[in-house]
Image (tube, rainbow, N blue to C red; front, side):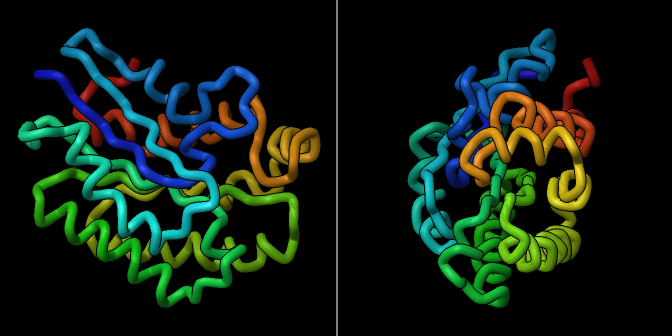
Length: 198
């Protein structure tokens, strides 16, 4: 297998904001991805505060710069955070933006993988995020795209809540990013990338 290039697009959570180690979940997942069958490069292309509409407007150019003409071994990960909730984007619009990204990726024969939003420390935000996570899962299911639900397993998780409380209430720290990475690694990551479990 050749060099696999993975573009991970999304907001501050993709960028690893708040992680004292600077790895975020993307760095942790990348570090645990086997490379004995060939190199794997993950590009964390996060923009803090970015909505799905803004992501829809930039992901093509971002991935094209990293992939060049080599599409056969390239993959797309969409990491979604809280920006749509904070910007009061309707659920219908949010669904449509994700669907448009996934449909275009499929048209380009670019395998996609979606990581949903984790809970925040704000109950009113979580009320919307729970429904939104379910909507994202439905969009992915209809397109046979792997979706990792981070909201449901973390909403009452003691370590997650402690980590959020120690920071700004939105971005986790070292422990929180480790939890997201664990969910991704055990949510179909290795099958999707075509590598054996480490």
